[in-house]
Length: 92
Ligand SMILES: [Zn+2]
Image (tube, rainbow, N blue to C red; front, side, top):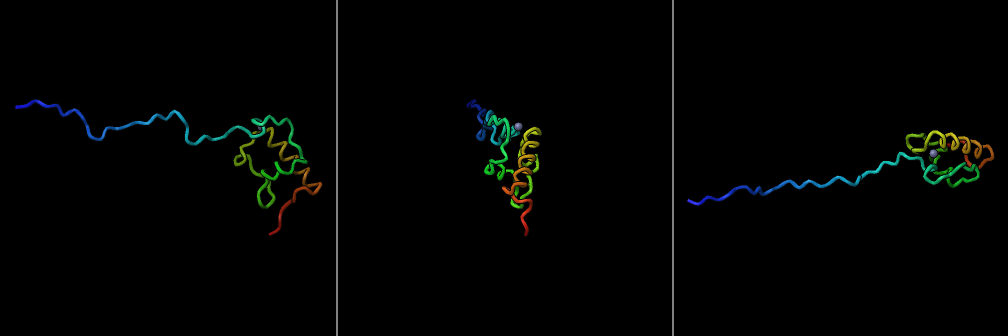
């Protein structure tokens, strides 16, 4: 009578280390990371990125911009609108 061990499990669980985050949510404001002191209303390229297709200003929860920069952003977008860089709303 042989005494053999049955210790080894065939499907041993391999736990992966979750050290790295697969989805890194960028909660940090883009302008803060870029160290933009003031958002230029003439910088249409940047402003366009925070305006929807319909010409609306992106809400903060989507854009992820901090309160301070969101405020600047809105001011800049509104200013840009006034000098016709950006449309108020696009019809359609
Ligand atoms: Zn910011």
